[in-house]
Length: 250
Image 1 (cartoon, rainbow, N blue to C red):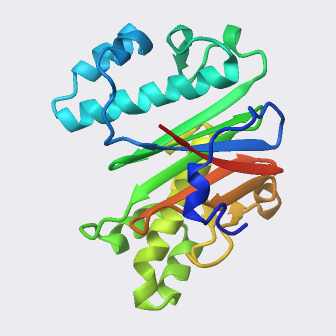
Image 2 (image 1 turned 90 degrees about the vertical axis):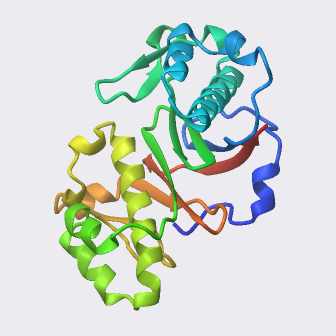
């Protein structure tokens, strides 16, 4: 499926209805360079999150972490109907946060990604999901990274494109792959070369095969998320969502 909600103004809409049904995924855009009001972090973040925030040596990293976690808790509180401070987050072996089972009878699922001053938070129900965002950087060796992280089909596809498109194709492919492995819950324990996504940045962002199995790929939905010109982002969902809604958190 091609890029969702590609009109920038759509990101500014207010949340009109909390979605609680299978097949709906809400994606929240969070601006991390905005200040968090004084005292708010102590009223929202857990003690372990406050301690983690203090360990950041960079003031910018500290601010971005606090802003992202504050947004995450407030967003989740709208779906759970409980105060943001009371939300309990457990952590998987790979460090991925998830809601404590006793607070999650509706099987809400979420995933967080951030790059530079933007973060995305995807929220759905029951279906596994993953989101990724990357700010385009000109100081990376895309050929070396593609050789290490892309499948043979993806590398061949990258080389087949006009040179002017290869940089865009690399970031499109990278965010599509990252969104998928985050959705599986396996993270980088799922080798990136073991599956193939469409590499054309202007084409449909399908998963083409998983470990050589094309039928397995059909059980996953993949779409690009249009942001600012210097960002690429993708969303992966198990099954097929009937609705993807964009929102901004302020």
